[in-house]
Length: 308
Image 1 (cartoon, rainbow, N blue to C red):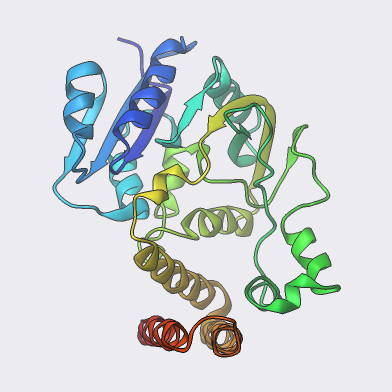
Image 2 (image 1 turned 180 degrees about the vertical axis):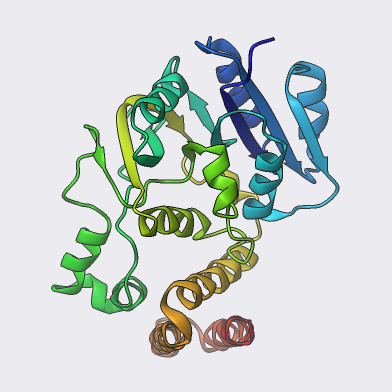
């Protein structure tokens, strides 16, 4: 049996129907060289694991009894991978024929690159402009407060979001979206994979930053296309818990990459955002009881974020 060239790790949490479509798209794609598919099910309660076992017996299934979240779930799949190349693929995607071969082929012929990502498109075929530049210390101030609504804050926001890039052609980028990212398995493991302290958010940003700090380039390959149901995989989560994790992971990212000063700065910005929210609620048009309840909920959320 030929050696596996690419290991595709698909993480799933209560996404049975869309996971089925993802695996079906992989099944329709005839790879040039042997490929393995590993599904890590994070304690789904919708029968996802059973569906995979019944309908896709060739897939390697790792069924966790609980939700280990994004970083650890993907790392678990990467540890089981046997391929030379590793693809982290969200369950809310469908690969177009030949896309993964083009991605691995690019890394094969460009050893100076550490990772490559495809063009992501919406179900209607429109492109998702999802590449970004790395967040700086100014980024949270602009993105989290009203300062980003007017120049020069809006200009900076446009620049961080790569508003100058139409996403229709290939080029080097700093931070492609993590919905589909291909790297070398050995290099991924050498970097320690996705940082578990960034359990759900910013882990792909951090991985790309670690690659760039090593002098490794990252390519956005427009010739490889993957359809992405944007945000589907996180919709099943409780919004309050998801927002709390986002703030906590954001603080952990800034602490790791900008030191304690960066983390303190981020928390100060978060305090400014909370103050803005309080003022909007207090002087808004809601009834007094509704305003008081909203303020209490905001206060509880802020306390959890500060204590994290």
